[in-house]
Image (cartoon, rainbow over all chains, first blue to last red; front, side, top):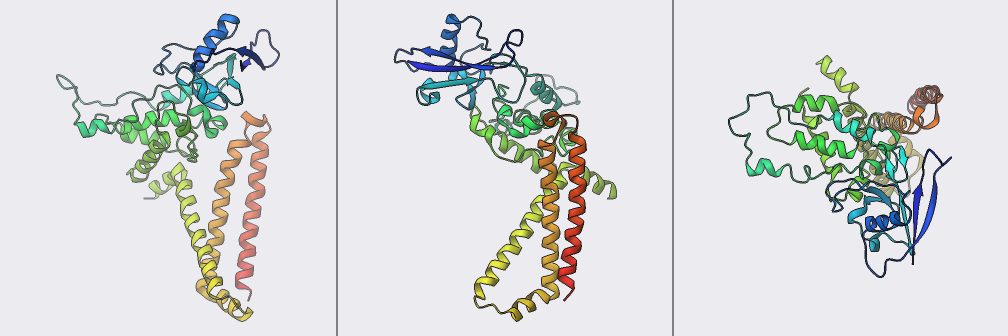
Length: 234
Length: 122
């Protein structure tokens, strides 16, 4: 039997959060953490968590699993169980709405700041804006971000200044557009990032790289943004 | 040019740049001192005085001192704006943070004056 310890908090009933232990029999199978949550929800329907695609694409079920942020749907319990115990908490640093569900408004506000869309005021061509394979390859490792918030909520700089520091996820996305050959808003984008907090609060501790469930490298993207800021004419 | 310099000063890039340059200078000073002490194992007071009395060494020491204080000033600002904020410790945070900054500013100038006094009194 596996002990599953889950963070519980219902603001309408509970004075403060607490950890609830469940006994769980995996029947020898290496289930995903999301499977465990689903089965426990049958046992206790008041347990609340987000989930959707259950295959690591939608980014809904980001949680803190035995101390490390990750997607419940693609984390096998064999990777997460420590001493026959599985501990599941909400992603740290953002307000908890209920149980494992966090309020991601601050995270999305930072995402909105980086203007996550193509800026190009020139008249669109008849068919599409073409890129060479080399230009397109610059977006690899950037466009795959699913905005699960595992990285930003693993970042102490984002915990302490979530309203000023863009966070690794937002900065990875910022570089995704800075690196895009079709985007002409480079100077505007860079000038919006050139303050002491937006980019430069990153101290390169690479928690984001360690936890990204898609294997992306926000620290590297932040380094590229810094280089662009240094060589920017403004 | 001035406009560009002012913008650079208010950007995050300035602090970042200063941290790197000052770190390099401090590292150079440390390496120089270690090598000097290594190649002079039987260092006499006369040799040590002669080294530190030379204008070049005085300038190097003073620049390193300024680098260290600049580095500490920026580093402290980062730490204070991480941990001494309204978000973390409540409405008194701004007063506490600014008081610490004021105290640090006085301490920094005192260290500079002290360094000048030590380096140029003999």
